[in-house]
Amino acid sequence: MAVKDLPIVGDSFKLGYRLQRYWDTPMASAFFFGELGAGLFFVSLLLESAQGMMAGLLITGLLKTYFHLSHMGVPTKSWRAILRPDRSWISRGLIGIVCFIGFGGLHLLNVMGYIPGFGGLLKLLAGAAALVVMTYQGFAMSHSTAISLWNSGLIPVSSLTYSATAGVMVLLASVPESAQFLIPVALILHLVVAAVLLSLLHAARHGSPGARKSAELLTRTLYAKWFFVLVCGAGVLLPVLLLWFAGNVPLMAMIAATGTLAGYYTFRLLIFKAGVFEPIMSFRP
Figure: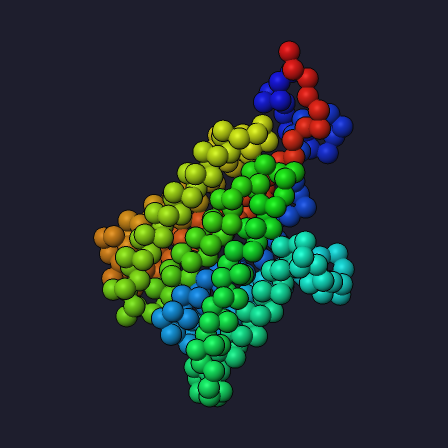
């Protein structure tokens, strides 16, 4: 029996693929809110929107932290993850989050006039920390050689692209007067998201047996309807059409932003659910 013909066998002792279940819905939510908050903060930083920066800090600081802690078996020991920055992207990311909340909060206070001075330096440090939070989760996933779908340089790119796109769409929906500038940016970013998704699927279909099995789950079998309807349809096609034809209408911008976030969250969830461990051994004819 060739590797490609083997089934998904769950927790049995049969020969076949096994779906990873170590990272599931709570981690997908943590990744989503962490990148969403950092992306919103970064875009708001560039446009000097204090409300957007505050919302971004709260989303990452509260919701990402909550879902991470809900995933952990012993939350009181979670601080230990920060001790290995030389070998762990999780550790580097945690340091990035601490810097993001710290420097981001100080910059926000500076913008609001509570802390005079050092504005340029704080803005630079806060922006750099936000970029780390926008990308480190993708690097943590791509570092995993056991799951072929994740072991790709496109995963960090997808984190950065989705994070920036979500930030732009949330700001567009909440600040209608920014539409003239943000609509072209949002359209370009959605096209980049589409290119990243196609590239990720192309790489998976021409990769190892495990990557091909993941691509099959996403596009042909178990998760295909969710991938095409929510990730591709609601998350890319719908926002592009609404922004192109009626982006200046606040209600349409809000619907487009909702579609983008729905597609983004579904992508975060499915990229975990479609990850498979390859068979330890196989029999070839």
